[in-house]
Amino acid sequence: MFHIHEGKLLKYTADVDTVCIPEGVTTIDDDAFTGCHFATVVFPSTLTHIGARAFERCGITTLELPPHVTIGDAAFRLCTHLESVSLPEGLKRIPNRAFEYCTRLAEIDIPDTLEEIGADAFVGCDLTCVDLPCDVIGDRAFRNCLHLTRIFLNCTHIGADAFRGCIHLDTVEIPPHTQVGARAFQSCWRLLHLYLGEDVALGHNAFAECTRLTMVVLPRGTVLGEHVFYDCIRLAHVEYDPSVEIPPQTFENCRLWCPKQNSK
View 1 (cartoon, rainbow, N blue to C red):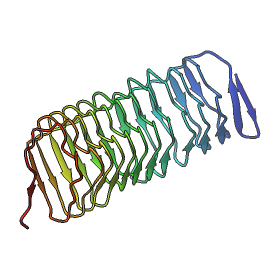
View 2 (cartoon, helix red, strand yellow; view 1 turned 60 degrees about the vertical axis):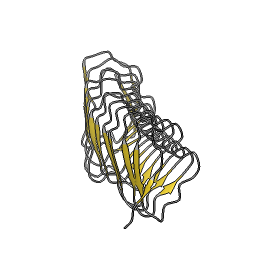
View 3 (cartoon, rainbow, N blue to C red; view 1 turned 90 degrees about the vertical axis):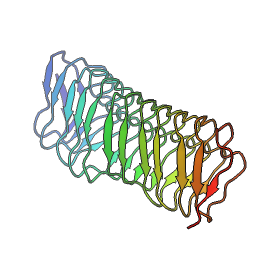
View 4 (spheres, rainbow, N blue to C red; view 1 turned 180 degrees about the vertical axis):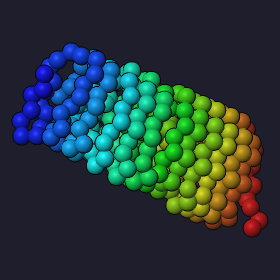
C-alpha cells in the first residue's frame, strides 16, 4: 500500500475510499498519489512537505492540510471533485498550478500568513468570493474563475492576466502602491465598480473589454500603460488627478468624449 523510505512516502498503490497516511511520514514525494481515486485523505501531524503533482488528478472532495506544511507545484491540479480547501496558518506560499482546474473548488480558507500566490494557482476554479491577504498574486492566478464575484485585496503586485475572464466579478478595489500587470482584469464583462488607490501602476490592457464599466477615477500617482481601458464600450465618465498622464488610446473605443481633470 505505502512505499516509505526514511520518512518519505514514495508511492501509494492501493485502491480504497479513504487514505490515512501513517504518522512519521514527513514528506510526500512528487507524483506519489497521482491519478488515485480515493475521496478522503488524512494527513499525519509529522508531515512537512507535499511534493509536486503529489495528488494530481485524485478524487479528493475536501482537503484540510496540517500546520507547517509546504506544497509543491501542481500538487492538487485537476482534482475535479475537490470542493473545499482549508490551508493552515503559517503557510506562506501557494505554488504554481497548485489547484489549477479544480473545477468544483468553491470554498477556500486562506491564512493571514500567506505572502504569495503562484502563477496559474486557481485557473478555472469555481470560487465565488476570496479574501487575499497576500502581497503577490501571480500571473493567471485566478484566470477564468467564471463564478468569482468579489475579491478582497491587500497586495502590491497583481500579475499579468491574474483575473482575466472572471466574467462575474462586479467590484474591484486596488490598494495604494500596487502594480497591476498586463490584461490583469481584461474581459471582466460585469465589472461595474473600480476603485483605485494612489500610486497604482496599470499595465497595458489592464481593464480592456470591461464592457459594463461606466465611470473611473484616477487618483494621484496613477501610471497608465497602453490601451488600459480599451473597448470599455460603456465607459462615459473619467476623472483624473492633474499628476496623471493619459497616454494616447487609453480610452480607445469607449463612450467617453473627454476625460475630466480634477480641480483639487
